[in-house]
Amino acid sequence: MSEVTERHLRILEALLFASKEPLDANTLLAYLGEGADVHGLLVTLAGRYAGRGVNLVRRADKWAFRTAEDLGFLLRREEQETRPLSRAALETLSIIAYHQPATRAEIEEVRGVATGKGTIDLLLEAGWIRMRGRRRTPGRPVTYGTTEAFLDHFGLEALSDLPGLDELKGSGLLSNRLPPSLQIPLPFEGALRDDEDPLEPGDEDVEDNS
Image 1 (cartoon, one colour):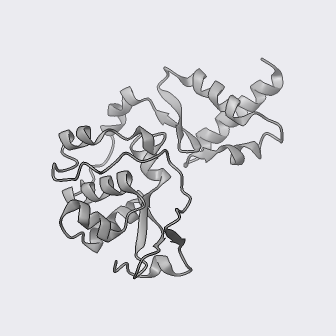
Image 2 (cartoon, helix red, strand yellow; image 1 turned 180 degrees about the vertical axis):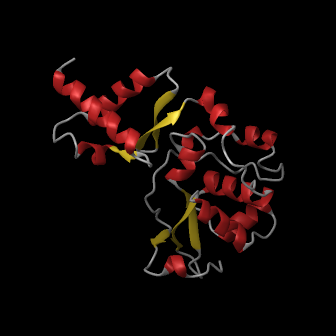
Image 3 (cartoon, helix red, strand yellow; image 1 turned 30 degrees about the horizontal axis):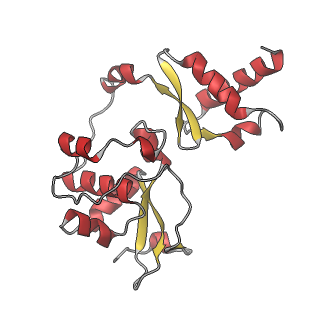
């Protein structure tokens, strides 16, 4: 392997270790120079860390070092206990993940019960969901989708890696009343869909009454 390639790998390693957040290829390329095969270098670096206590993993279109899954219990011993999400929050998060973009009314229709604004706010504050846009229907309700932080927290490379609905129901994260029409989504992509308008300035500060 050439000296240039080894230097590039060391640069990537240093940048990813120092970053608190996952980094995308374009951000990394700025430190390597035009023409560098960032994706190939990342795959090579990931291979070097396979089997170690720390792995290089992909989250959507970004990369980060994370503790190996089989050693995660070591860190959990040191973590402060946090208040677990309520069943309503878990079901709401699951529905958004599997059925995004989703409005609050659509979430309520799937769950069969009202979803309080506090539940949505809790997930927004956790950084696991975001306001995507507004549905092109009367009232223009806000649409919600998951974030890269959601993928990172749950150890997913893409939404297509989400467990099946039967597995979620078996774990108690979803109730058996959810309709069979709820489908696993396409791999992660954040672009607005044909039935969505972009958010306007100030939308994030306006209460969602949809």
